[in-house]
Length: 313
Image (cartoon, one colour):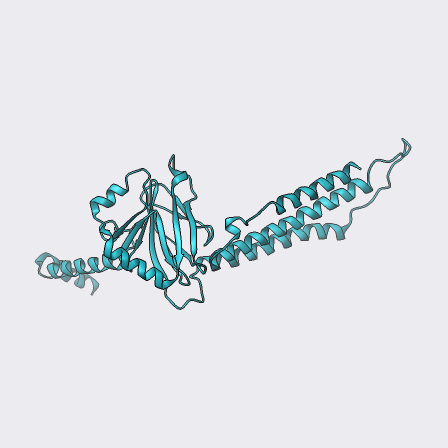
């Protein structure tokens, strides 16, 4: 009787919890292809584990009922039963199959979410997302604008984030658009996302970075491409330019509201080496050309080059 009541309470608890969810969890309410892939993997994992748990509970109930203590005489001895090779193969093979299945699903989905979303005509919109204590800076090199603590993106177009940090390691995460990825000080990580549904979404730092970590959030608004273009034009017409002094002031630890600027910090404070925008790349090429021209006029350079050629020969 106690076992039946325990099973009843278990089933009732599960039903109560599931029916109490008025709206789905954020990560299970995807608004883009990468997020849908992630949500599918989560649900596959949940259902796989649920099946395993339910089977184990049912077997447990069956065993304690079937082999419960009975009113046997004191000298009763149960018959000796040898091991079953068939059963041993089955309960060894089942975990292997489950692990192999989840491994295939995980590897396949990982490659999908790391790649640029397919099925879109336009090339990805590149946005440099850098963190500082406790803010997010979003640089749009293609549009030549920059925002702080908020992000506007067009729908139905791949978005490629270049992530790095001006402080401790932060975790860039927009749950309804995809998984999180770290922003670090000495390298740039790439995160590919896309939004299919216009709307406002929440983004945050998912990695603890000190006392201001809880407020290091940002708003994300996905809008049709024509509205996004209109927003860019308005910013260029009304926002103040971002100066080097203002940017370094923004990097000071603390909380800020939302800010908007024309220009980006990529020119005077580029990402870690090997990851820079076209403007800084062109500048470096120009500087390199000027350096080459001056080197050609230098006797020491010509002499060194001549000696190098002789060595090569």
